Image 1 (cartoon, rainbow, N blue to C red):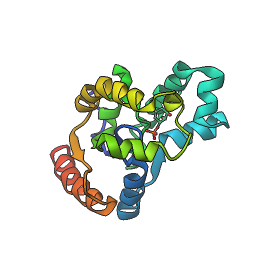
Image 2: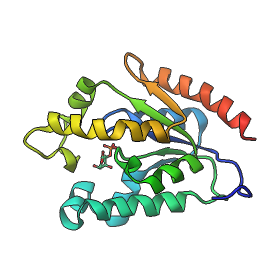
Image 3: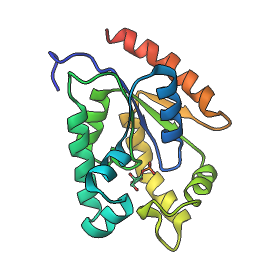
Image 4: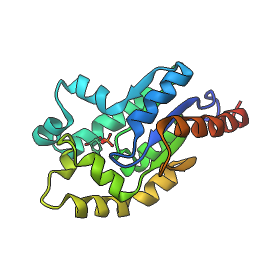
Length: 183
Ligand code: S3P
């Protein structure tokens, strides 16, 4: 990460669990034809187990180390332009926030609490919400993370009332300005 490296070029989606990163990532992939890297999926493939199993067997810190390692690998100056969809807690580490911004245009997708609760309540894939009171957990995590998403992001998108096509159009317009300024 220094001045002599080429300019950033990927679009990086961050945001809380259930904020729509994977769906919007697929729409951007469809529009741009860039490869989509879903960090959670890559980590699961490498570990050959689900994220819930990684948390259960190895603990959260081991999972966070896997995220940092993957971000370091993605920061390859020779890599093609990509869409990168992250896990909701990736912004927890300062190092990760720096790596994210170096990868490209960082877009924070923000959804209202009710939407997040509805989406995350539909499956059991998210170990951090395996608790007696997932609402309180979401609220507490959100309070800690909001300033970190804000710090990491170049663009803050309120997803309320917008479908993934509308979101992708808005993101692409803003990204065009960003990349023009970095050429
Ligand atoms: C996490 C979010 C999940 C996944 C893991 C931890 C978090 O990804 O990385 O369960 O800390 O918020 P999604 O945001 O895609 O659900």
